Length: 108
Image 1 (cartoon, rainbow, N blue to C red):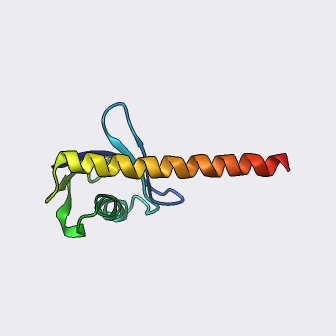
Image 2 (cartoon, rainbow, N blue to C red):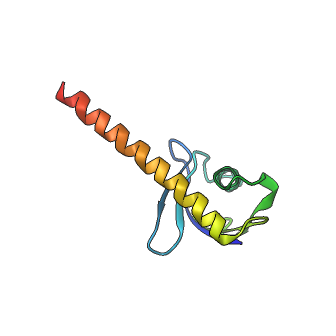
């Protein structure tokens, strides 16, 4: 299955950030966009999020672009979508908790 991504290299941490209106998944990676390091970090992050081996994920398009297409072997599009949506929901919930915690600290 193919997966369309929008990548933000050089971020503070690597994470799944959002599902864009275009259908792309937005991800951030801490690796810089030099010598293919960000591409490697994207492949590593996606393999972790999808629960597949690193070798099952390959960059098909966008080696020098922020828009990338990955090929993921051994998983259906439906399963991949469900796993990414679940990961995004977890990240969103954690961000909301952190925001609420910060607000309460300001009140004290």
